[in-house]
Length: 173
Image (cartoon, rainbow, N blue to C red; front, side, top):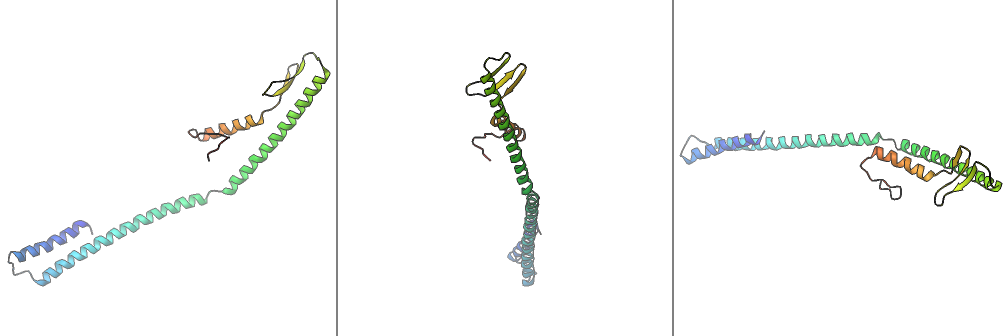
C-alpha cells in the first residue's frame, strides 16, 4: 500500500466525521470503527511495504558485498608471492652477472694498464661514472645495474599507472 491509499482511507474517515458534524444520523459507530480499521490497515500495509523495500535494498547491498568479497577471494596471493620471488631471483642473477662483468672489465683494465702503451687499446675511467676498456672497435663498459633496474621498474610502473608519482627512494604504495 502506498501513502496515497493511506490518505484515501483517512479521507473516508474525515468524510464520515464531516457527515456527523453536519447532523447525518445514518453514520453509525460501526461505520467509524470500520473507517478507523481501514486507516490502520492502510498504514500497516504501507509500513509493511516500506519494510519489504528496505529488505530488498539490503539484500541487493549484501549481494553486491558478497560479489566484491568473492572477487577478492579469487585473488591469488601465492601467485603474487611467487612472481615476487621470481623477480628477486632474476635480479639476483642479473646482479651476479653484472658483478662478474665488472670484475672481468676491471681485470682487463688492470692488465692493459700493466702493459703500458698499447696501440689502439686503452683503459679508462670517468670520475663519478663508470670505467671501461677499448681495444680497437671493441668497447666494454662497466655496467650500471641500479640505473638499469630503476629504469625498468620506472618504465613498467609508469606504463601501468601513468598518473601516479613514482620514486624508488620513497615508495608510496
